[in-house]
Length: 515
Image (cartoon, rainbow, N blue to C red; front, side, top):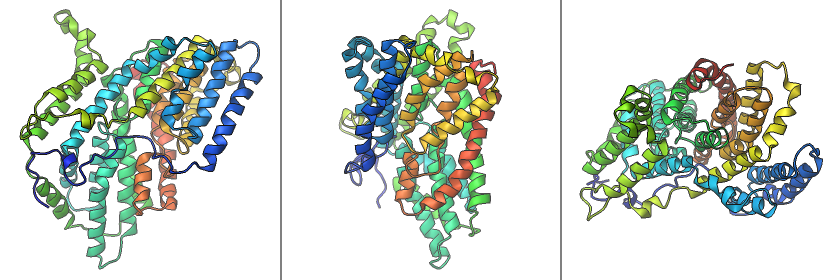
């Protein structure tokens, strides 16, 4: 393998293609039985919901609930592609007279969608020039040859990269490096595989990809969907830096817990030293060559974006805003779009007029996720507009007197369970308006239930279908379903209590929630 000259993007090397930047599962080649059942069951459930709701609910409210049941069933069974289901409000709300097309379409242009679009483009630029791989290798290479520490290094690198790059792409990138290390261990043991080390390393990469994504608003779609819902429905703004005050500590704490659980309790490695592992990592870095001017420019844009998302809101709340009033008008989405435009403008040294990002690369961003945001936000807005959320709130009298901590525990556990079986974004889109109504009915701050549900949606570890990283690692053949369930059951249980701890210890202060 020759050293990278930096004169062509990473996407042009090898197979000349980028890994799919997506957080959804790959579509099945043939319709499954569940999909066929979903096509029949969805309209039946929708009709049942409409007919069973009492007259106290307006006709528009009944229709909205029916459409929600229809979409939830289609999302759960994936009878239609998830983004296609997200487009149904544009058809059904106007047809049934619930909302005009312009009102139903407005949430599809919510500013959180442009925040995620800009984040996707930044991630694609990092992938295009292989910057994300260089950063990951540098982190892993710094941890030494101890097997437990090496697994921790892989998890740290994966967790950091997935804060900014889609968890699927991050896992795909880390997979061949991890397999190379596993192969080395087998060679050092005269052909005998250290099953525990291999399992802990592969699961560590998958789990870190999910855990790290919680840290930022652009790390995983449920985070951004929650922000859009709160803004669209309750005019509550959650900033990038404000979310990191909650998401980053949770991710850091849980990453350490997951590392300890995997390497000390569930799959402790048998091998005691990996002297050749560093040679593999250094070899990968050597093959990449020195950091190119183009990589440095992409890194500069990345650092500028992250710093702007974190510090501009802080400056806007400081006395400096009286001198620079425009600081108060800069939004997270505006920063994301500025970053995206800059990537198209900044030249890429060593290319013939090329830029850090071109449209051929940018067009590969996962448009389906953006449509899913729009569909979920439109559905949520009609829950409020038709009074359905308010009605749900009036029906939660049975929960009066239930301790808030117990309610949070049930919500987190339920979302975790459902996310094991369905798309985390679709689960979030379905639950947010319902939980919003429950919170209103119990006279709770709406964020009391919405935030923990959002966090839980990205922390499913038991099944390959739960998250794309789980599926990628399972598909490698290095991990069985039984091994994943064994480790995932531990971490799912821990996740419930980590989320509860985060809510009481950090989120209450960061978001001003009174429990």
